Amino acid sequence: MRIAIGADHQGYLLRREIIAGLKEAGHEVLDMGQDDDTSSDYPDFARAVCEAILAGKAERGILICGSGAGVSIAANKFPGIRAAMAHDTYTAHQGVEHDDMNVICLGSNVVGRWLAADIVKAFLGAEFMGLERQCRRLRKVEQIEREFSKD
Image (cartoon, one colour):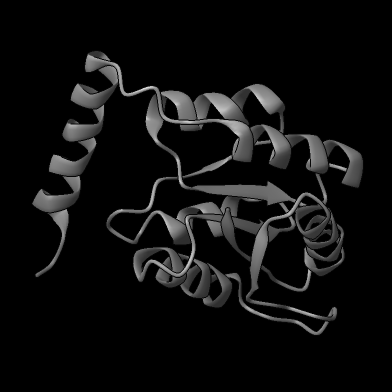
């Protein structure tokens, strides 16, 4: 799977750990940075990861900031992106299976590297189930996007 990953200064160390695990598992990684703890702005990394997904350069995305909240908020501003913060494996796989989540957001100050690895594995191993009720709900979310998008 092609994965775009990005992190601000709070998440750069966890990003490195996750990239190593992704490559070891055979995934293609599109690394959107950051490489050090120099202060940076999480929306820049959310934009890079989300634009890669929307352009078809990646199938899923991983975003990391200190809490996971900032990157989640920024990512969800992009029509077609369904991002959620997940600090447990259940949310990571259920978000894909039921809600067709395509970006997972992690808080580097919330989860350690071992739990983060398990969360990412659950996220990438899950597939959208596509049951009628799930598709109906997703269509409603897409309708909200269309209604409130500025064209």
